[in-house]
Image 1: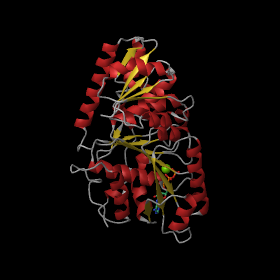
Image 2: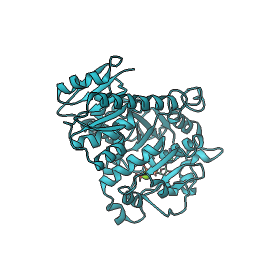
Image 3: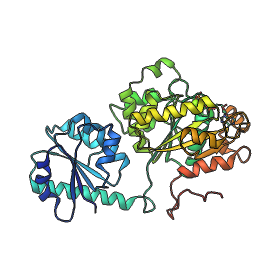
Image 4: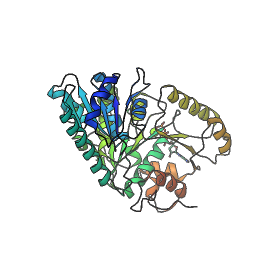
Length: 390
Ligand SMILES: Nc1ncnc2c1ncn2[C@@H]1O[C@H](COP(=O)(O)OP(=O)(O)OP(=O)(O)O)[C@@H](O)[C@H]1O
Ligand SMILES: [Mg+2]
């Protein structure tokens, strides 16, 4: 048991809640007038790994709306109880949908508060016990980024997603957020989709739980959401609706891989907010490496520091490029993965059959290492579904 964290500017709330929390649990209060982002706020709030977070009624409604999904997604062993100043039915439903476990009026008396806190702890404990493999199937959202076009984002996103789906069918989603020129469907050899991202974003406001109908399925068991064919429809996608869609879908699937357009456009930033992992892809030429460094700096500046960062050096053996250690020194990050240049990649892209689906050819060992790094633990709790090759 690690206790209760209260989010409020008001010290007297902690004193008021103390008898409701009971003796067996510790409590602390956190507050800041200027958290850099919801991610940073959630990190600080959940730093002590609380069983329950109580959000006080002085926290702005807009902040509560951003915090709830963040805590729900990143800290599955924490339950949130919201104390609301105005407690309309609509607001209660919204907060519950966003991930709160309970919503109470700020004036609620101690016995009712105690009952609610106990109920939230019960839910959290049930979640812990039903988590796969004891350690829990950690929800992962892997966003593939690169400042430059043509570096291999789509190739890596597609191979990673199919590789994961072969190990965990029906549990993996590939979200193609290159909304203008996304080509994941072609790389997977999928027929034209009946529905696309524009349909999902249009529907999310009325029913965020029914988005699965807009997904296509690859024979590996991978679910795919493709961008619209029509450039105008892509332009019309409302960022707020996109955010809700990404939030709802990443809750639905234990593993999501997101392909993005070159650079950091709005869809990529939205996806990055939900990310557990950012996978930077770069080739070994100087402009690309410089651009990755700038991209990392930009993400630091906007406070997107919570997701784990990985660096995939593509065409790592290119004779004209920098060496892997030159690159690592420039970027200040270890090249987590190195994929050599291989003709097998463009051939597979053109055929619409991801390289991981082929029995032989190309750098399959290196691709398997990427997949294993993100695969859920097997029943023994061991990371990866197969042992990493030495
Ligand atoms: N390691 C590699 N060796 C050889 N060819 C590769 C390699 N990785 C990717 N390619 C090829 O390079 C081309 C561009 O790759 P890809 O479409 O994955 O890049 P991208 O970063 O998604 O580009 P964009 O920014 O335009 O979306 C494709 O034809 C792909 O098959
Ligand atoms: Mg691409």
